[in-house]
Amino acid sequence: METYTAMRHFADSWGMLAMLLFFVGSVLFIFRPGAKKLADEAASIPLKED
Image 1: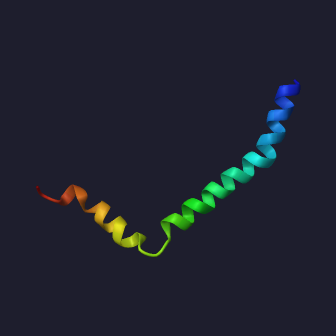
Image 2 (image 1 turned 45 degrees about the vertical axis):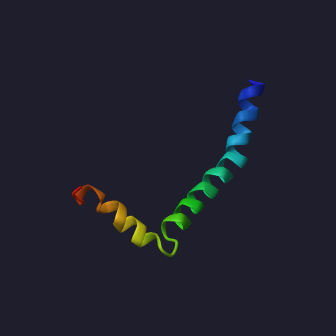
């Protein structure tokens, strides 16, 4: 049970912090300036003809 308790403590503290930082980083990456142009280009890839 000692390993389970240690892993549970890690997940409750540092694991949650890592997930929160990943989420905030993802949101900031999506809403950064210039992202709309790149997203529009990526969305139009299937419609482009070779």
